[in-house]
Image (cartoon, rainbow over all chains, first blue to last red; front, side, top):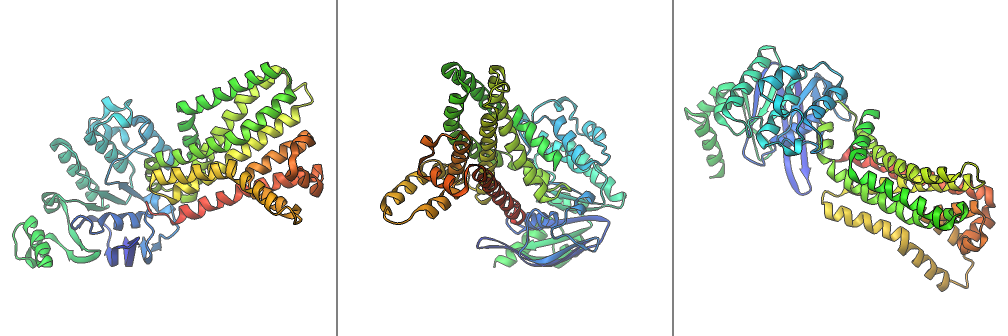
Amino acid sequence: MIEITNLHKRFGKVQVLEGISLEIKGGGIFAILGPNGSGKTTLIKSILGMVIPQSGTILIENKPIKDQWEYRNNLNYLPQIAQFPENLTVEELIGMIKNLRGQTANDKELIELFGLAPFMDKKLGNLSGGTKQKVNLVLAFMFNCPLIILDEPTTGLDPVSLINLKGLINKEKEAGKTILITTHIMDFVDTMADEIVFLLEGKIYFKGTVAELKKKSTQNDLEHAIATILTEKNV
Amino acid sequence: MFKILQYSFYDLVRSRWSYVYFFFYLVLGFALLFLNSSVSKSVITLMNIIIVLTPMIGTIFGVMYFYSAREFTELLLAQPIKRSTIFLGQYLGIALSLTLSLVLGLGVPFMIYGVFQSSEIWNFGLLLVSGSFLTFIFVAIASNIALMHENKIKGFGYAIFIWLFMAVIYDGLFLISLVVFDEYPLDKFSLIATMLNPIDLSRILILLKLDISALLGYTGAVFQKFFGTNTGLFASIGILMVWTGIPIFFIKKISSKKDF
């Protein structure tokens, strides 16, 4: 599905990714973890072609993505911070993205699931953070694509929406899709993720299942397992 | 590209500033025609205003739009759309909506006044063409600056400086150098110096067409002598096209390497 080889990215003097090589085979939920500034978002944005790496290759479905754009027809992306053009209404925004992609979308169902119906004619600039995130989720899930990339999907969501989100992700997983998630909520990872990729200082520190990570750090709880890795690394 | 152009265009057309710009030209057109009561005199007055104002508005709108559309751009970048399509679409959206304000704002009063029956129609048309060229050129330059600088204040500062340089400082430097190097043959120098500034070039373009030798000035006279009136017209339009093409090429180039 995704094959990354020796990816390097530097912003000015800051080296963010230092030779990431990673293979993600299709189907399942893959959590990209790591402390703040470890390069999670940069890695995701490189896959999307929003960030252009200095060196290294990224293949999606065995095709290099450099200077390509058609492959984005087959992926959905949820950005970390829900920022939208403020003078558009929710309805206009959803309509615009549907028009641009020209694919069939199940937006109605998602709008109902997240209870967004009363907000459809409101301008995006006037929405609360959580409501914006729900709009963000509708945009990310409304197209039927084999690859879904979610950057911090849980930010600002209330418990009901969080349960809905988990249900949605599980449904997509059962449909055989590949889901890439970054998050800081370890409970979410513990219950959802099939595999973990742990980034530290721009390198892959660990790749494997949750159980393997717990075993490696001799901790029963994922949160403590991660904390152990981080403190060991710092000592 | 058309879809992006459409969205940017409507986004701007819906904003208050497009109307302010449109009504400004509308009022200006009526006022000038009322005060001068002659189309040809109004065209000359308008030239002086358009040549300074269109680049300024183009610069300000270009920079402002590219910074304020940052979220929209990021949203589009994650969609299956080519990068150059996004940026060129946005650029054309701004440039076209500003040009529309200019053409409609001035067109309506002149049309009511009967410019179509007057012999000034070509002069007036050329005025609108050069105003449109200046809009396209300066929006493109401003877009480049906005793409190169993440810091809004810096980007705005540089863009305004470029406008100020082209509209005011350039002429000053040009005049000083003409005085200082008085003893040398300056024909070639002034010819090239004029071509290097789209604002000067537009001014000469219009004056050549109006055929008012008293207003041509030294550079205009050199231009007329070198090219002759008709070739001069085509040459200056050609150079204005190059002036539009180069920054558009750089929008494509810079945007293809930028991280978001």
